[in-house]
Image (tube, rainbow, N blue to C red; front, top):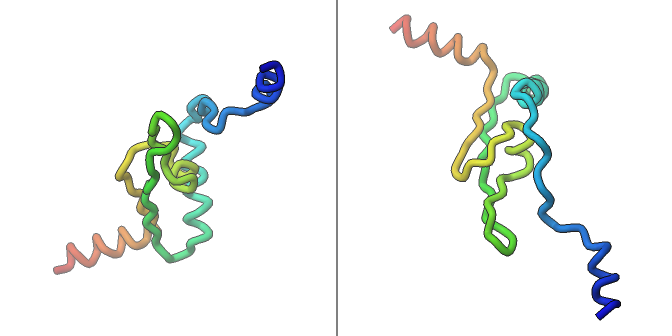
Length: 95
């Protein structure tokens, strides 16, 4: 029994408590850095996490959470260059 307690003492829980919430500016800066790397491309990232662990707690995809800080099943993040939006607006108003 003592051996089991000694072994369990060094065990780190696989699902530790999340860090305190970061300010929204951190996630905005991360998205802006990714968008610079994308250049003129667009990207869509799904949360696509699955419930896991003993209590079936939902956990989003790491990349999605790193970019958004959102833990919402079924969520999507769409990144595109602002110039695309301006061009689409010009095109839709010229018709």
